[in-house]
Amino acid sequence: MKTARGLISLAALLAASSAYAQAPESTAAETLPSDTAAAPAEAATPPADTAAAPAETGAGEPTPLPESAPAPEATVSSDSSTSSTPITTETTELAAPSYLGLMGLYTLPDSGRELGTADIKRGVGMGLLYGWQGEKRWGYELHGELTTIETGSQLRTDYYHYKLGGDLFYAFGDRAHFTPFVIGGIGLSRNDVYPNGAVDDGYDFFANVGVGFVTGPVIQTGQIRIRGEARYVYDNYGDHYNDVRFGLGIEIPLFKEKVREVASVTETTKMVEVPTGLTDSDGDGVVDSADKCPDTPKGSRVDGDGCPFDKVIELKGVTFEFNKTRLRPDAQTILDWAVGVLKKYPDMNVEIAGHTDNIGSDSYNQKLSEGRAQAVKQYFIEHGVPETQLSAKGYGKSQPKADNATAEGRELNRRVELRILN
Picture 1 (cartoon, one colour):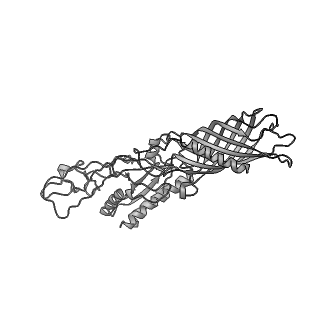
Picture 2 (cartoon, helix red, strand yellow):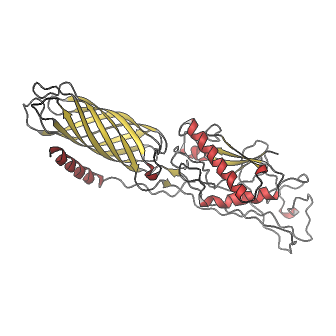
Picture 3 (cartoon, one colour):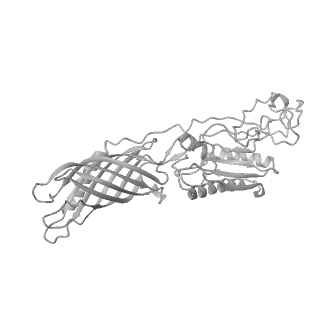
């Protein structure tokens, strides 16, 4: 009966404290889920800018597709064609900022805790917590605990600890992937029975500091994660006690993963229609008045400005579901544009290259990048591009294009590229 009453009291105290918890930040200004996002945490999601198909620089670095010049007003030939590429809003998935936790607890009590002549053996219990982590990786938790300390005596009852406290922590990751953290805080505790029988039951404060970890999702439904921790606990009750407490349990994110967005920018790129009677000196299909790269070699593959494609075309706007290889619907526009280019140049062979940021293990990121590259390849095949034109390869986190130490850099590193092979 005493344990049941304790659990009911603990749940009520924790529910009241959680009412003051900060609501998760609303977000509306970033990218694809990132990283991109919750990576690892981590998704192949380049930031919004312009679509791919830049002029060749010789350095192999992807650059934005140039703006198209307006087509002259004139009668056009019947075999002219137009391809438009709206650049859709890019998104990135991150782990949800708020979460609930349920922990099983095991305590090694201070040797000074005793009940008469009975030895104190161990403590077992459970804990509930509510937590929130900000984008800068600092966060807080509110927690409640009930622990039964066993004496091993047949003559004396066990006694109970009820605790309610708050902690601050710093996490070395975004909780979308394996994330270690350091944590510390204070709180109020009640000891049901005083250990040496000299003082009545009472309340006092405690302090704790420790380390822990949380994994990436182990169950996709609900994004459930495993959490483990170890803490040193200073209990100010009585003669002051120093306990060591271990915890293992689960974390369940509240709400959906954050999806940060960038304002949509729409831009049209035309395979310029050739006006009847206007001059196209280099024969690339772009009239001289709209040709920003005149005198391109005959047979060159050019974009809407008459400039050759770069060797690397970054597919900005291609996004995936969180921690998965399934394409989001908003990736269709840029992929359909790429399908049109590949069909126009059937002799052009490309490698579809997948990249991630550095959050998560090498093997996890390698597998994720390979799966996403294969998903893009399959989309192309299903939309009529011959498989002989295509290859797919994942590079994991091995080829960053920006600094992984910043959120902005990680966003740039989560990307999918087309590499022209011939």
